[in-house]
Structure formats: structure tokens, C-alpha cells
Image (cartoon, rainbow, N blue to C red; front, side, top):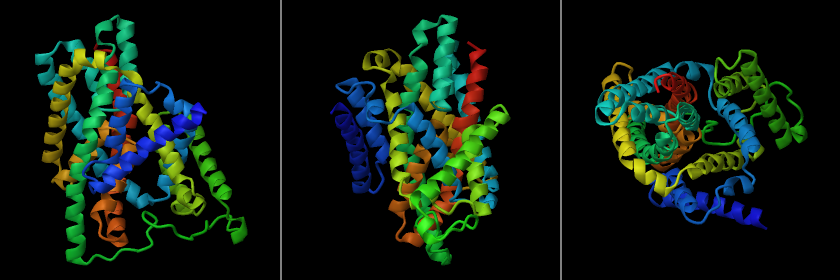
Length: 391
């Protein structure tokens, strides 16, 4: 009985977030609302393991990530993926702006250990936060052990509405351009609709084209991707390989466009992954947060300011609008799946029809996904590894 109750609560939080987002036309993003609900719940009555008991445990989520990233690869082609090198540069240089400002000014305000402990999770996700927490314990700096995880909790909550605002500005700009220049786009783009496309390889009769047939092929690509990552000793992050191999499998005709949506499981997997991400918000308490809130707020402000300055200066040389450049950099605050959710939510709310939505997604989503991988999956882990030696 408890499992069903916990599952219902988790999905209710998701639902409230979606309804608030719909009611405010995405001015208040769904993941921001859901994150706040989880934080309040964990600080009051919710058990810390509610998400695991609701069936969204670590094993399920590991599968979710691989399958979803292969699926996202079916929404792009190799040319689009390679073309996102500018988004990668902007995102990484935005992170560099964060590092420079927090280290230069932050170390003048707070002691060195405080700044070093807080900055890696500010430029990335949970992995960076946990690396710094373990490093602080190993060095015996127990007074700052709660700082990295608390930074992770707060900076993503700040990042959601700020990114939403920037993406809305970019979306309106692109829609105005689309309408003015009367740009033609495929109305059946895989980014916004389900196509009846069959895989060119293994093109079996329609009665054999079942959801399980799609899931098996997506799982095979995910398995190959993770196996390849192990083969190269994770020199390239497995998540990045899943995305790239998903693109290749789609281009070769092994996977159809929008694979998991055609299989009918995309939303289920996305909700499970989001729930697991929000479960990490149980790692701190109001009492702990109260002792370090000043350091967190000041360093978040400095980090965002550094990111903003770098993005604003570099946007024009890299051929991007300033809101788009800043949005790419802001992916460092949360990464996947939040970058996907925010982007699709904003594009849907700003667009007036399916063609406009497809145009927005094609121009924004690849940049946000690749920017998120560059910062959270790659750069933040490297930064955390370096900063551990600075403690």
C-alpha cells in the first residue's frame, strides 16, 4: 500500500508542476515548481526514500538515462550534432567565467576552502557535489561537508526560472524571424510529431513493428554505447556516447525517429528520471542550510555573473544571440534531463503552431543538450577532480 501512496505523491508533484507551467505559459517552469514541492516535502513530512519506494530506484534510472539519450539521438542527424561545436565552446567558456569570478572575488570574501568546496557543484551536477563532499571528509574539513550538496540543491532551483526566462526571449526572437521570413519547415518533424516511419534496416511487416521491437533496438544501441565506453575506459562520458550512437543508428536506419514516443514509453521514463533527480534534494536540511546560506547565495551570484559576462561578450563572435548563449552556459546548473524539459516546455508555449514549434526545437534543443553534456557530464567532473587537489 505504501508503494502506491508514494508513487501517487511523486506523480502528483509532477502534475502540479505541469499545471502551474501551463497556467503561467511556462513563465514558471514545471521542474522549478516540482523541485520546490520536493524540497518542502523532504524538510517536513516526506520520507527520504520516497522516490525509491515509488519504484524509481538507481537501477531503473540507469536504464532510463541510456535509453532516453539514445532516443534523443533519433531526433538529430550527424550534421546537426557536429554543428553544435559553438554551443559547446560557449557553455565551457561560460563555466570559465564562473570559475574566474568566484575564485578571484569569492576568495576575497570567504576563506579558500569554502570557495574551493562550493565552486565545482556550482559548475555541474550531483557527481561533482559528491566528489567534493568525499574530498572534504578525507581532508578532515568537517565544517564544510554540507556545502557542496547544499550548493547543488540551491543553484539548480535558481537556474530553472532564469534559464526559462532566457529561452523565452530566444523563442520569441526566433518565432518573429520565422513569421517575417516565411521559413518553410517539415510539418512532420520528428521533434514535434509521431511519424509512421519504419526502420530501413529490419523493415519487417507492420504487424511485427511492435513497441517491444522498438525497445529492443533502443536497448541494443544503449548496450553497445555503454560497452564502448568501458572499452575506452570512459575517456568519453557514456551518456555522450549514447547520444552519438543514437544519432548514428537513426542515420543508418536501424532506429526510427522519435523511437521511444513511438513505443509509448518516453513520458514514463522521463518522469522516472526526473523523480530520481529530485530525490537528491533530500541530502540537506533547513538547519544545515541556515549555517551556510550566505556563502551559497554570494557564490551563486558571482558564478552567474561570471557566466553572464562571458556569454554576453562571446555571443556575437560565435554567431549566437545573447539569450541563447547565456542559456547554453546555464545548462551547467542542471544538465540533462532538465535542459530537455525546459526547452520543450518553452518551445511549446511560445510557438503558435506545430511548424513554429518544430523550428524552435531544431534551433534550440540541440544546443541545450550538447551544452549540458559539455558542462555537467564532462567539465564539472574534471573541475571537481582538479579542485580536490586544492583543498
